[in-house]
Image (cartoon, rainbow, N blue to C red; front, side):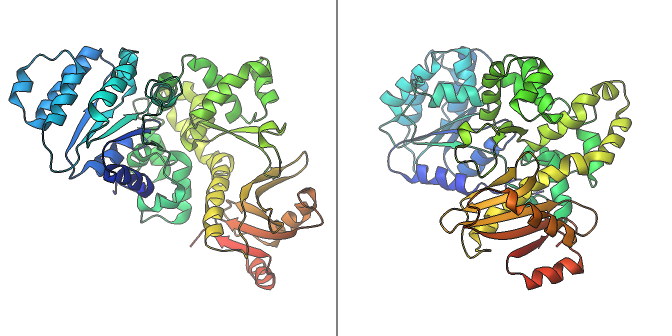
Length: 465
């Protein structure tokens, strides 16, 4: 299996920082398992690099390990046996050595240093100013606790604020690259595997050993000692203090309560008491707030719906969390049966809409229409729902689309249903040109293909090929 996929842009950013004259300080962060260490390892190959992984131990213990790593990096026996009481000496020792090329110092899981000693960002700021800043060196501060990394390195109150020369927040790998992990799978299979693992390289790697999706779910998720069984707990435990409150909110959304009022009602709390929790979950990339794409002021819109942004968490809260008593009592086969019956309808079909949105941006860039849209999302009102809606305000073009993850080919009825909803969309009504697009995981009937051949305003995208 190929471990290094995508990340070209992030590698280019790191290389550009490395190539700049003088010093570079890069903050690289993102949730656990998203591939930060793999990215750094790829970048520092064939460069003189010191890689240090901080732990949750005390600061003196971390400093002792850093000293060992430094001695090894410099091949310095004197340093190995020396007692070192300050970080400054270690950084000075590194820069005292002449290097042929710019050295790279990586402090991975940097947030643990600040956790063991809240003054550490100030200590490091002084080291940066006095020892590193005016030298030819690149430092990468890397971390997987998003909230801590932001408060320790990026926020206005951090001593390191304004010192960084670049920052990278590493996200999940987009679906467009997913085939590189599984080159032998059909597009339909890729969508199904992506619906469970999302774009998290570690999850993909775990699944790659299985031939069948349900076998992979059984082995990695429904098995109490499986790596992914308790993953959502680990993710949240590290980031937030009241894990229970956050779990209740995500569970409520997974059960179909997407409006703020509905989430508050199921939890029997006031809507206002949820705002800070929802904001944190959005900052952590776990949730997103969606409004109809036609809303002029999304922030102020009363039509916002909350959805779980992360495919694995969406899957876990829908199928694992409510069935834990079965799994704990050794009846995971029952849970797997439930998953088999409803995975496509209750989960993959919704992930498929996200996949189609990603594809829409690619089609937009590839000039699939005689204009370029600038806004893409969904549209809904009290009576209608439209899977895809894209707006081109300059040319007053509107694209409406449907995404069908069915077993059978899509026929003309889906198209005519979409046409019937067109008038419900108020945007530029009477002044616009409307276009239609249909995505199908099982192809299209001959009737619909014949219809599309006669209409310039209808595009079909068949996912079976």
